[in-house]
Image 1 (cartoon, rainbow, N blue to C red):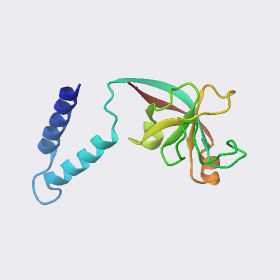
Image 2 (tube, one colour):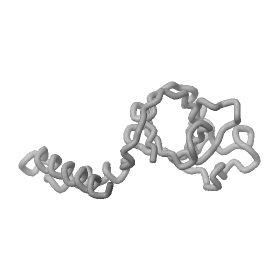
Image 3 (cartoon, rainbow, N blue to C red):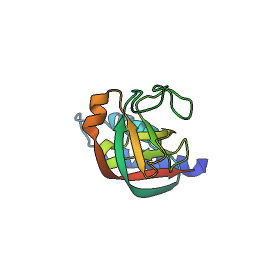
Image 4 (cartoon, helix red, strand yellow):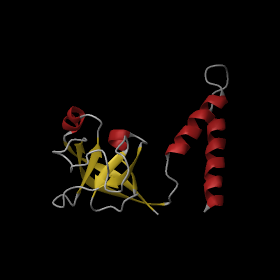
Length: 144
């Protein structure tokens, strides 16, 4: 597994160097720095599936959670990148490319049992969660 990851990284670096324009506009090292940041944010699990899911937003208020609104079901503190989902195991990594690009979310929380088919995205502010509303989107689920 490690050797295949290293091969992928080396191949991506070779492509970035080859694609870098010549001249002073954007030197190759800037392309490499950008590539490294993208690689660092991307899960390397090879098993992934794509699903269509209903997405909602929530924030840390007692009326949207329980009496410990800043603590997740997995006993971590809420923060950017935390999602709640009942149908995915705690620790599962997901991406929602059309809405959040390459951002990686982690399932660390649960929802009320009546919401077995939704993913709830944590927002720092109640107004932001309300603005997000209810949406359907393609979700990449990384397994493994």
